[in-house]
Amino acid sequence: MPHVPVIPPDGSPPSPRARALSQRIAQVIREFQREHPDTRPADIQRAMRLAWGEAGVRTSQQVVLLVLLALVVLGLALGLFVVGQ
Image (tube, rainbow, N blue to C red):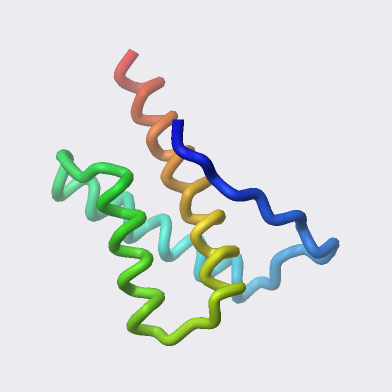
């Protein structure tokens, strides 16, 4: 089982901009998975790491986003598993 680091919340709710961005990222991932059903969670994680590198985001932000994306991927994988049952 892969290890996913957990970052304690800073006590403040996510901003509307952060929520909107996370929804857009999740939507793009779902669309890509529909177009490419053989996409593995590892492919998505690698793509996000590459995108972060190109965006020049600081390391602390990378960790937070990777945790959020891992949770989104886990949720999508669980949803697909439940639907497949």
